[in-house]
Length: 330
Image 1 (cartoon, rainbow, N blue to C red):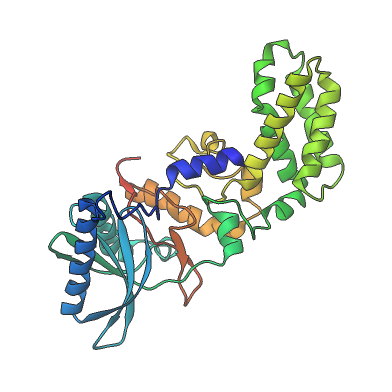
Image 2 (cartoon, helix red, strand yellow; image 1 turned 90 degrees about the vertical axis):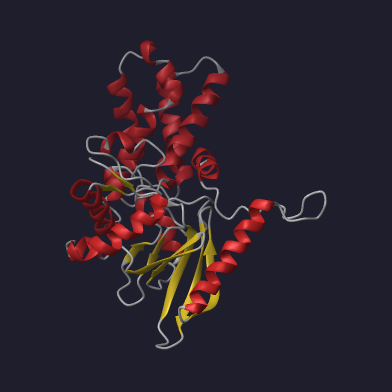
């Protein structure tokens, strides 16, 4: 889990607020330009008949406002990005133009993009207003920067012997200490058999119980002579098991064809197959992500807890941030 969180702290750079005052107390030039762009964008929205109600959020590449059409009262989300952010603008334009031609079971996972407005140095992406996902569901399905506080994923996994066996097998087969000892192990398959049997022989109330059970069964079999190696093995085993329990169900980046299974061991990939099957609520979204890449040549990227919301009327998941999606041939 520690490794997973460290990877996310390196990857997610959103909402990092720098010191606005330098040695002279003046705002740095790049922040001043950013502030001016936001003021200009708000003025542009006002000139087009929209009132800005509140700020909904901001990230590394833009800020999002809730706006209201002064004539109709309709409320929307207005994402403001720099006009030279071609990739992001093209992705939202693609969604706006292509969504109507996609099968409904996949199209519903994209936001309804209403209009792209460019003025000065900014482009405003006007789209439907969405709502946050409840914390438990969000933490169980999507990658997050912080450790989960409301997720009940471990409880669901521990109730399924096949999922527990799968995690035990992956954790042992990828244990870095055992891999260093690979040439000295007489029977690797026997070691996996012992691990799976120990993991599934009795129910486990929590992950600590599973870790301790596996550690004892494998330690008895391997009979480490060095206490240091024994402790390193235990720590690696614990990290691997927690990694697979904490790993997101929905991939951060859609794996390319032929790399699905390999990506299950990478921090941006999907969860293990048996674990994934325990979360049918994510199946539709993951099927849509595969469709976007394989049928539309549009690879989903950066699908994490901060970039997915719900449609209030249907409760469907919606990938709200399309900025890093990648066009290509897959």
